[in-house]
Structures are given as structure tokens and as C-alpha cells.
Image (cartoon, one colour):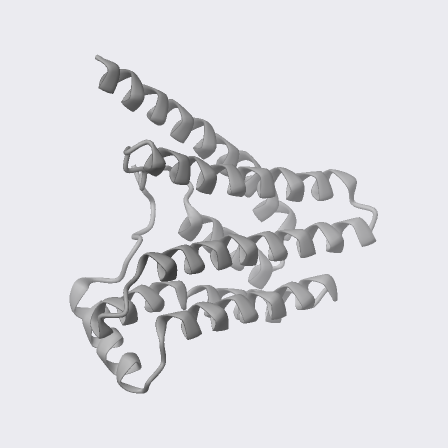
Length: 194
């Protein structure tokens, strides 16, 4: 079960990939721009500028839908590029969540700060379980609260000024998704052994 799509429709992907790739922009450049934008969003969060932080975060996180399309359209898809993009995605998300923890800690809001760390744990666990599953030969794209859902909730929470509610949702649902993926991986490995 998934809530949001992982990719744009194929026709849209192809059009974007050809257009952006035709400008000489590489997939790795897009990945770096996305990471840089998320660092800027983190700085804005730490300064308490939540609305602009949310807009920057949503805009630059959306580039994650573009880099793969450009890689496929230009024939520049590579194992290194996929790993490079995945590492930057994880680092970007972690930096923004750490900035949220900073924001709450500066205000003495202890349980909200703890929720940020719980959300960070869940985020890393969801991604790590997918990586370990793929090493074991088990495809793992499913899950209730994957990166796109986490980005949407945090971005909307920042834009609307509902950061406490967003962090509570992230803390609970990202960790439940990690448990869900661990159970799915255990089931798949058990089935393989017969």
C-alpha cells in the first residue's frame, strides 16, 4: 500500500527529461541542487522562518522527481548516480529534521524535540530497510509512509505553521512504516527458505 506516487506519469517524465536534459543539465547536478535547496530550507527552519522554509523544502524536494527522468531521457542513468541521489536524499531529509529539532530545542519544547529525533530514526530506518532488502534480493518499494509522504507532511506542516502536528505524524508513521517493512522483509525471506 502506498499513499503518493513515486514517479510522474511516463509521458510527463519523458517530456521533462528531454527538456531539462537538452539544456545540458545532468541528473547529478539536479540531485546536488535539491540537496542545496534542502540545506537552505534547514537554515530557514533554524531561524524560525517556517513558511519560506516549507516553500523552499517542497520546491527543492520536488527535484527528486526530475533527476531520474533526466537520467533516463539522456541515457545517463548509472548505479553510481542512483546511489549518489539516494545518499543526498537521506542527508537532505536528516538535515531538515535536525533543523526542526534545533527550532524546538531553542524554544524549550522538549517533547517536540524528541519527536524530531523519533522522526529522524523512522526516516533512516525506512530507507535502510529498503536498502538491506534489495541487497537480500527482495524489492521493497511498498510502505505506508515513504519519502514522498514524509516530504509532503513536513512541507505542509512548515507552510501552514503546524510543525508540531507534522512532527508527531512523522514520528509515529515513519516508525510504523519501518516496522511494516521489517515484517515484509521477514515474510519474504521466510517464503524464500520455503
